[in-house]
Length: 455
Image (cartoon, one colour):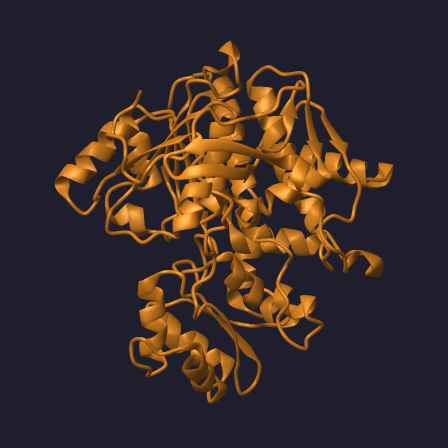
């Protein structure tokens, strides 16, 4: 990376720290662009988000400095594409997930969960078991907006491809623009309490509850685990998962199952919250509040807690409660449109909104722990894929020669670990603190393998 680009990344990380009221230790940036070919500065977004999380970890652990390599950060954004079990990559996208041409443009359907697939088929008037050709014909006879609306109303996930100008005119974009990239607010009183990370790794002894799925949230908590946190993932047998992702994002964690719809499950979660320092969740805005686990309730149970909320479109605006995933947000906010030059959707070369948001969430959690160690209090961190997309857009555009390429070298950034699932190949955790790399001490657990208890 040229000297000028190093300064850009360092400056963006410093500004992130200042925006959340934390002075970060120095960050050294290494590497050379381009790494991920795109009209957008995905490499810069990777280096900044990973660098911010690494610098925040260094600050918590009393480190003198942190380091991030641009290629390493970019490859971390591709980790689900290089994750293997016994040399085989788990299936990624479901058969009906994809982009479909409509009367006036394009729409994307996200059908990785069976109930979202069933909702999309029902909305399009198709029978269960309909194939991609039938879905394509159904979409071809409708406008993109109509497909987006009917599928969403049915409880499914769809996104009309909008141009950058089209998204700028949308009221949800205005709501997103009013939010900071990483929102950090004090939500209650709590004692001044420093994390226990000075015995070894920065987050040694910090207890984290992980109520997240898919990529962004699990990446956030996996990052905290890599810096020493004790992460307990709370899932449920009735909630769908993407099998490969739930394994690949669970390094260094434990896993329990609780049904929060029951009195027993809710009581068990309250007991866990009473011993937690960080609570990370990616339910749609309002969903956990309805079950009695909103930020204020959590702060009442555990004064001094840090609540981290991840969402697709933010907590405010007409789309605040809308289901969303990285690929859908890329469609609605103009990224896919610009990437394809307006001719058809072309996504980013990585699930960059997910990964950047995940690292920014981890950064926010550690920034909140830093503030708590000085000021006390209970804290709330808010991040969203749509706000991350707006930030990526603000970073400008790459030179023409950086738009095409084969992608980064990966082999030297891979590690292996034995597990109950088989021999795992994975992208190692990026960054370093005072020359020490973050790492995971255990392989992914089986879903619900552990009791709902701290250790």
